[in-house]
Amino acid sequence: MEMSKGELVELLLAQMRNLWAVDGLYFLGIEERHGTESATNIDGDVWRIMGKIEARRLKETLKVDDKDIPTMIGALRHSSWSLDSENKDVAVETDVAIFRNTACRVQQTRAKKGLSEFPCKRVRLGYLKSFAEEFNPKIEVKCNVCPPDEHPENLWCEWEFSYRKEQTR
Image (cartoon, rainbow, N blue to C red; front, side, top):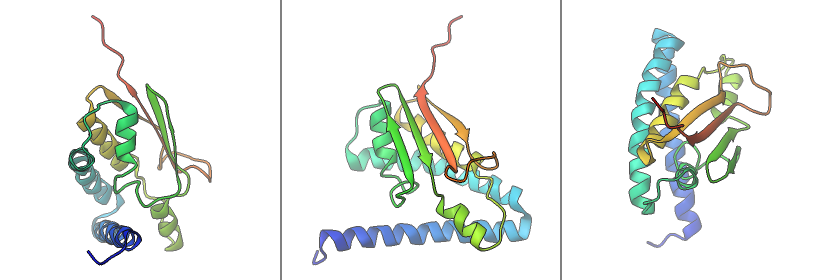
C-alpha cells in the first residue's frame, strides 16, 4: 500500500512481461524439440482457452455487463495481449471494430534471434474468437492479415470484429 499508483502500474506491467517471457520460453523449448508446427498447435490450444478465461476475468474485474463490440474492444485493450503495447491501432464503431498490430514485439524478438516469423494466425485467431465469444456469441472475428500471411512492414496483423449475419432458411 506504500507504492504510488505509477509504481503499482509498473509492477503490474513488469509481472505481465514476465508471464509473456515464460510463454515465449516454453514456445521456443517446444519448437526446438518438436518443431514450429507442434509448438504452434500447443500454443493455439493454450491461447484459445486463455481468451475465454481472460475475457471472463476482465468482465468481472471491470464490472462489464454490456455485450456490444465497443465494450468488448474496451476490455480487449486491457487484456494481456494488448495492455503493454503502444503499437496497437484500434478503430471502433457501433457495429464493427478493426484492431491492428503495427510493430509486433514477439516477431521483432524472433528476428533479432535469427528465427523465422512465428506463424501466429491460428494462435491469435483462437484467442480473439474465444475472447469475443465470451462477451457475445454473435460477435464474429475475421483475420484480414497475420503471419504466415504476407504483410506490409508496418502491419503485422489486422483483426475485424463485427456481428454475425443472421442465417435465414
